[in-house]
Length: 201
Image 1 (cartoon, rainbow, N blue to C red):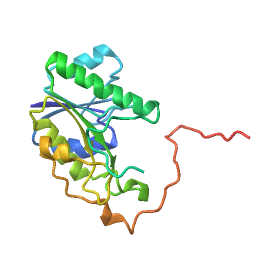
Image 2 (image 1 turned 90 degrees about the vertical axis):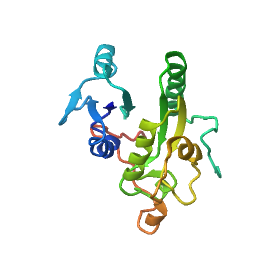
Image 3 (image 1 turned 90 degrees about the horizontal axis):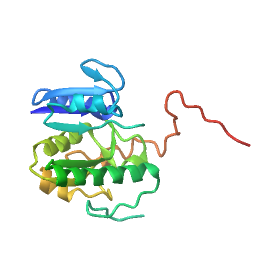
Image 4 (image 1 turned 180 degrees about the horizontal axis):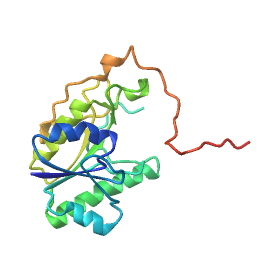
């Protein structure tokens, strides 16, 4: 099976590419040049069509950079434009699955890092090994369309992954509770490289 990974220079892909390389024929693309990466911009329709040609599956990672339980069937209520775009993308996936016979799996990934960066990350943390388990399940499922939370087995997390367990065989093994005593309470906001913050008085 040929798997195309978009956003291949990003942090999430850094976990997936080495883990999937021995099992699948990988093709990787990003706007940022890198080893084994087809460089291009997916907003260019011609480039997107060419790079997707021949791929059996696309793992689409490219992007511009009080509840007690949230199941995968909870209707999204976006807080901002970023969230609206995420919901739109999931609905576009359903449209293509239904109208074009594609299998579309949408993964709502938590914060993917080796360790949670702060206490606020604990409920939504997703370890690298659990990410690989989740994506491997998505690549091998027979599900026509589905939306799944991508978090580790975090104690006290509000994000449920019952459907991911049932449909994708996802068995998360890591728990952010192991880091409770070692992560800072909060982390200072850090702008993206090249972004300057100005304070208006």
